[in-house]
Image 1 (cartoon, rainbow, N blue to C red):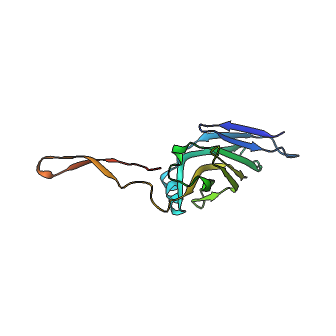
Image 2: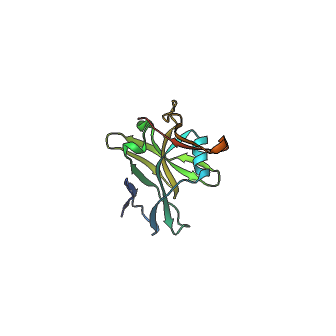
Image 3: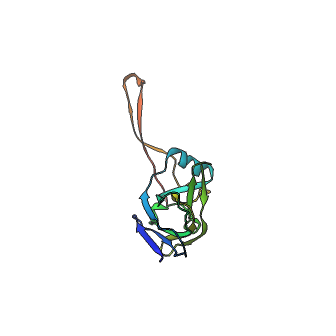
Length: 163
């Protein structure tokens, strides 16, 4: 019998098809945040991560992972400045410290969903290619306070992203 897992906001859906003789197990979803090393690996690969990241875990872990389809929805503000048609889901390989694109990714920009095929549990993120022209304006100092004698200064900065 096929299994469907739906979780998260925006929604992540994982469909595991029924396969004859497959072992019983549990598939778990958990929202995640990327570490500095994972963010650096994405940057080195020319990827611009969104704030959509999650872990899929298969229990027992020794169980062979079945092929599955994973779909992530997204909101316009989560992909601002990224080419929506080029969004994909990526799985992090901790041994090599690299992000690997899942197979067969299809993006439906009309309903804001990306669907791909995977076969391993782990950490996933929704990302697109780094824009060729930066969408972040240069840092803008919005306030400066200078201590007596000019010995120290405090800066407040504002990041602004354009659509």
